[in-house]
Image (cartoon, rainbow, N blue to C red; front, side):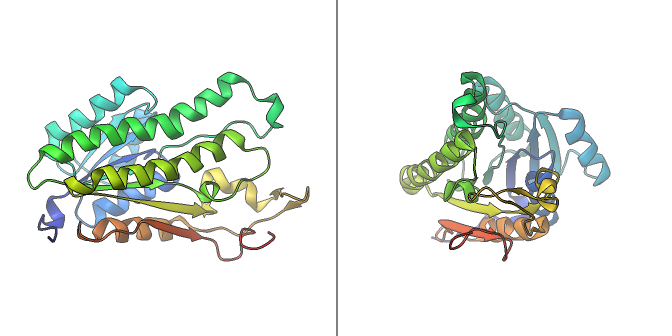
Length: 256
């Protein structure tokens, strides 16, 4: 069965949409006809993004949301449903990290903060998306998870982030399996070195596994947005299960 919902009528929620990858992807989805709920912790920043892009509430919503809070997640999805009537796409992008200190120096609070946002937040959003996508007509939708390169390989002193991103792969697989009967497709995009404010330190040099400090190549974040739009554009009888998109010369493949 092919997806017959017109692209101009499709609705998306993007978490972590205030900056970086989330912002670029949310704006790209609006650009191809989606109505998009921009979700993030900083409501004022989200509102500025929409104002700068000239987007009214007929095309986009700014919804201040801490994805680690199930009540706020539920409110985000309800507001999107009230405004746009359905949900076709969820991009689980929100993420955070802990300070890059030796593993034994991490506090339980630092660990839990990363788990709450990166893993629990993605689950809370997925749960709400399932509830909507199973009940709507036509039934179904797509969920894309931001796994990060750290879903495949760690950086030094990144245990909380790496552990949650590896767990995201398990969530992606379970979501794909459990969503199959409801026409809910789920895929994961693992992103390496997109040029955002978060990766600015790479221009000066960051720690490597061998102890060296090296400058790392980055890629335009627009390429990530294009990849997400491609994944989203497939009919629901096709799915990109896993995609890795990365700066070609970043130290990842081989020995670094």
